[in-house]
Image (tube, rainbow, N blue to C red; front, side, top):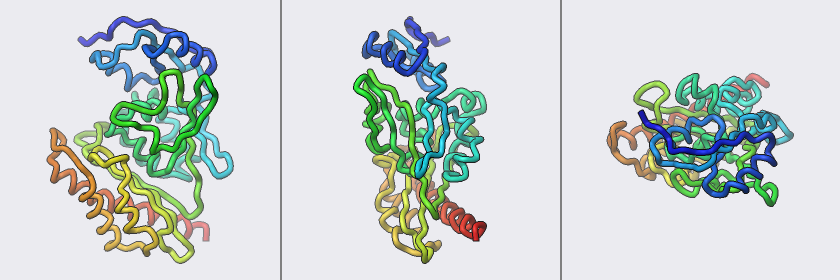
Length: 295
């Protein structure tokens, strides 16, 4: 049985109290919410914090709020809340696509979006989702709030730009007209980390062309998760199977997967190709379906 190293525990009563506790206990303290990322690392002694600061009582960080052109999601919003939110799926069906594949009901009931993003695991689904949706992250520290784009949150595997005395408090997704999104994933078994996955968000112009697009890949070694050449190839073009195939081909070329127990490098490149095609086709279809239902 794996047992964590000894640690002290404190329960924060407010966000300011949590920041105060982090300041008091220094760099060897860690924030805990759902615990599904941190606790396994502690059991393996990969992480050995001296203090755990429990923020589960901070209900002000659990919101899911439509605010003008933004959807604001508190960092303590549970996976199950995102999965079941009609507001979220109405604007961003990619979130429900991804959430349905994350772990199991026990994890989804307790795990938080903030914890997932701050884990910075290269195979983590919601990180790709937030890249594709061009999320902005609100981070609170002793000097107040700052906002960073998703592309600046992760500095590398398991490392983020959230400083030891700061807390990620909110994720903001821009709401766009004539837009939709999709995510799809291949895994060895239900709830597993991705062998490979892909997400896309598209905005169609008045003539049906792909006016804007974001394409991301999970678990295949793509720098920053974003398939830049694939995006450039389809932006401004009319949707077609040939266009999706070209985007898939470029995604397969640009990723850098490693062969492991989940599959060979060649297999993962094949998945990057095929899954890129699928998410583009699905996202475009959803925009067209939404436009038709409104018409």
